[in-house]
Image (cartoon, rainbow, N blue to C red; front, side):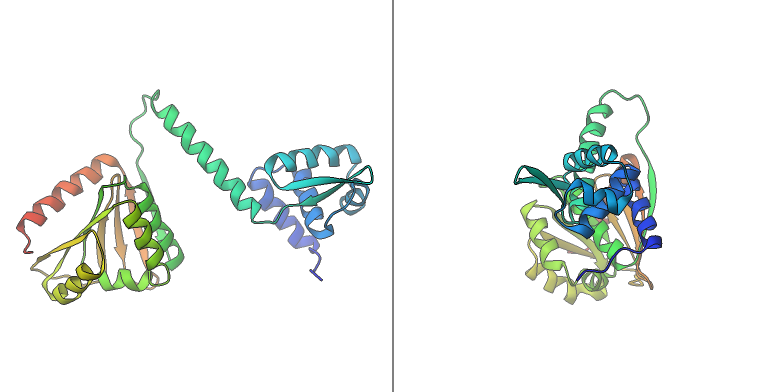
Length: 255
């Protein structure tokens, strides 16, 4: 049998649910549903100590959020909670709505283009950010890389590389890579194994510990230490400037 939620843990979870947009009573009712299974409102009232009127209001809101459902059995409503993964879908829907609204409002704003600075530390954050860069790159466009550490990228992405490459090919995103001469053998093997990939080589000192990735509106400086860390600047103007710098180096490099 599943264990019951303790008092301290219950408070922490309730606060977390509230941070996702649920009201206090909605959070309490949702947790009660997950613990009790399919029940009537009286059992929820005994579990939560809430008045029935508050319970029905909370249940209606939870059903709207896709976190609860009900059936009618022998003329009486029985309620149950949706799997906690529904919380992830709820946040994804909110993000999708926010993205659409932000895009629509952008046409009316007189604010300067947004600039952000973010730090992603650790393998999980690194991988998630690499997928973000790929998804934000327009289909048929390209990602530019200045590095001497291609094998470190492979190492960090090893568990999801097939998924990453499938998505990249589907979106027809080209990778252009500027590396050091000592990487020639490695890069040639990558070129033969990965579609939409090209490279050129530059002389110079590449430590293999830092790389620069230029996306449509971001520049990522990746430091392959312990843990791996990405320093990301989001600004279309700066990204465009780095792209011009890349093109200058590309012309100077050897194929």
